[in-house]
Image (tube, rainbow, N blue to C red; front, top):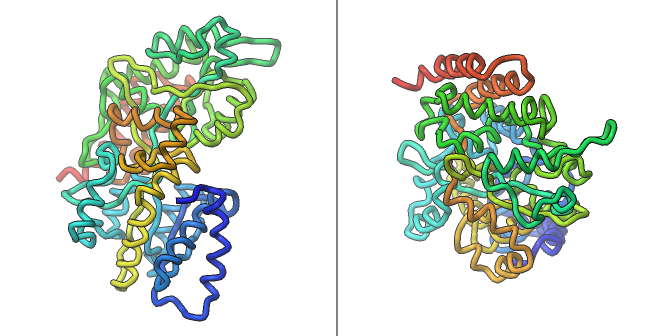
Length: 426
């Protein structure tokens, strides 16, 4: 599979195919969560064009739907209006919401051949934890991730630290952070930034994983937001800024954390491996990538988006959507997408392709997120997921801004989540 710019060039083929003399028999709409424009849309357009070249009887119409949050709203609104997308990339954690609203088809009920069954089994098990429920596979992994730590090797060297060694424990992280935090008037280089806006529960869940506690059951009907280990973890998260003073006080913005890293405002950061290509392109200094540090254990939640096939009366569209999903998740495209973006190629055989072997030989940091999968847990996902995670996010932001103590804030989140989930526990 030709990589990135070459595939992007294939986008020009889309227009040619779309205006061809023979009309395609089946057109499918594909929702993808990104704003219009930019290199990623060119890659997606290229994939659609290449698929159409191989399947001239199918036209794929990509629709760029903004953020993940915007995308789920748009997909549900369109579905309720009778104009659902045929296939969409949405958060893996949207699974229960899509099931409860009866919007998607269990993939394994339409992918029934031996080849289909082998395809469903081809993905990393850690990614399937947010793809399967109630005995069915509801989505297939596409752009999936774990959280990793990035560090500025030059800042480490200047602070007297080994530039080739990242923190391996929470204690290391605090100790390194103290050496790395430097103030020069109004200018500060922080030791670490762990984002707490957007979806603070996800970064917090990395910490709870390392403290050996799971926030929700596999059925998405119960949560553990206020047990002693969870409270201890929230306190540590707040202590990084309030006690140890190695992280900015208040809310650390998800969107600007990589920029802070590039500009030397933080020497370490936690963010998705999906930022790996961004860091590789924009860091003007030597940097490292490592698994997250441990406390009781190591690990990270998985994250990112799955491909879902929406319900509809047109079986031809459903079959075409399944064919497109299989194409996007083939070993060759999984490898290409991982190289283009930094997301983890979602199946082991993608890492055996020539393109991926060459990439990781030149850039071994790409292996870190994949290798962390052995310690990964499911991302927090429940029924009525947005309301449940909002309860936790609100509690975390109150703790991090110092407006509430950890225990009462998390007690309130637990009570709210329990009230929301009570309906699903019968």
